[in-house]
Length: 48
Image 1 (cartoon, rainbow, N blue to C red):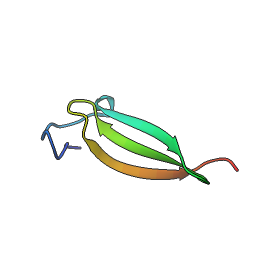
Image 2 (image 1 turned 45 degrees about the vertical axis):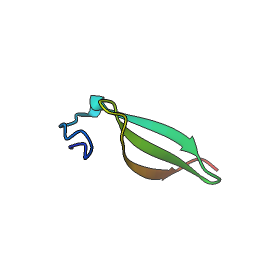
Image 3 (image 1 turned 90 degrees about the horizontal axis):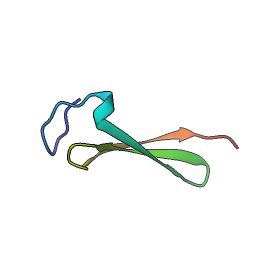
Image 4 (image 1 turned 180 degrees about the vertical axis):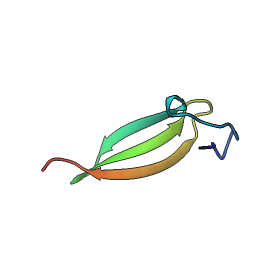
């Protein structure tokens, strides 16, 4: 994967996943550790 801001090739170790909770789901923001740019978001259903 490549960061669209700093144009560096990223490994798993170069990406930080920040978890935050919505009303019913757990959400994640993926951030480049090299420049701090948010690469993307995803959501994952959590326990109810």
